Image (cartoon, rainbow, N blue to C red; front, side, top):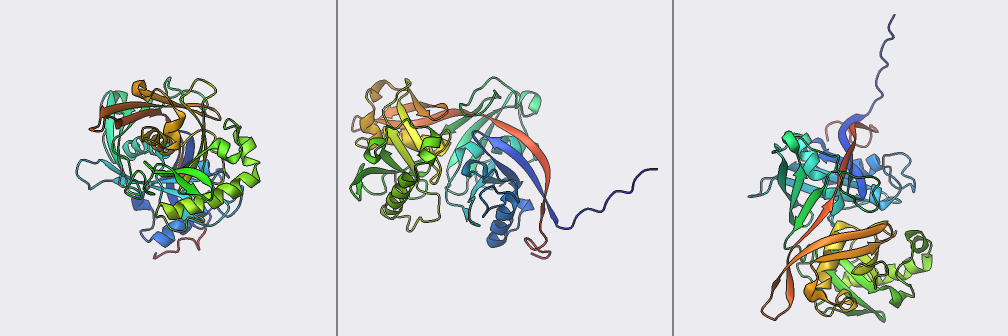
Length: 372
């Protein structure tokens, strides 16, 4: 005698796919499945991740900024663009979200998600997807492996900081400068004094406050755990970051995740630069794609802290950035400007993605009541 199926628990069921994109992870949603009202949508995403608890124990977040990210995906109505992608950073220990920044790691999962959700048709053996990030307006070309018209996740590409290997996803960035402020150097100079500390305030794919690690008493090659344990460092950096936000025209950035923070030093393992990237209240275990793109743009901007740390830019066509778990590589295509400097024409890098889980998230009945 078969058992009678149990009645499902109350609460709205929200379709979701949990994906790893690069070295980040989070739920991917179709925009059409989420509430149109922004305040209600934010409330839903906070509940989904379980935020305002350091472990995010009541949701699917991983208790870290890198695993508390959301991608919202839809078919684009913009000319020459296939897919729109909105990124939402859900804060871990407070019930809040930040919709200002972009995330290039999560972006690497957008193409596969869009194809498998029926938003576009794949081609054999590769598919080029033009994706517009609606947070910043930036358009990125992404090349996926789609043999037989199906997304291929397995392959031999390695992303340092991500276990195993997977199919390569090539991401191509063209003009990404001024993502939020409209200017590569929104403070007007390659170096700005912030309370006695020299900083390069750069807005490439994302606004970043760049500091020399030694200016804060660091070697620059500390582990992520060492940096996370340095509470005095984070207090000092946060004070500088708030000053930087004002100088960049971003207003009061307290409680927001931009500008990000990059601590730079000379390489120790054969790279171009050594980087410790703050998100901003934790040290990134690897390096954000948007942060890496911005650092390369800073590298080729005369007089910035990044620029003065590196020699031989005339012959560099790949920038290797050392991070706590390995190396982040970006290929660089440049052209000669009228002033004689090499200027970036296009940047590209390889990421990977994985579809981890598909199903529905059950929302408490008071989070998204019927009729909203």
